[in-house]
Length: 85
Image (tube, rainbow, N blue to C red):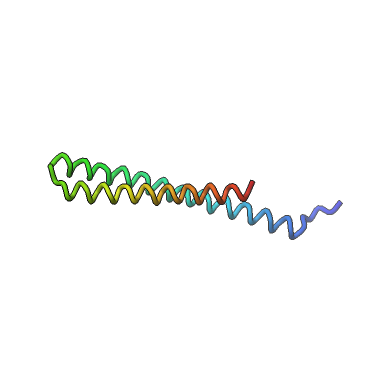
């Protein structure tokens, strides 16, 4: 039996490891966006409490868009992980 793994197995192993690392990085980025969206939501509530309608609406839109981007990143990470399995 040969103790040296074949290049094809090494390549597949590297590809899987690389994909896992990419998916993990994307999830970390999505988590950061989600936490940022929570902060933006507090700005929205503060503006709404001070009866600043235009500011409240702007912060609400920005927070919503940030959450949507984070959800897209989570979806991308899930797709990458589904190819690994």
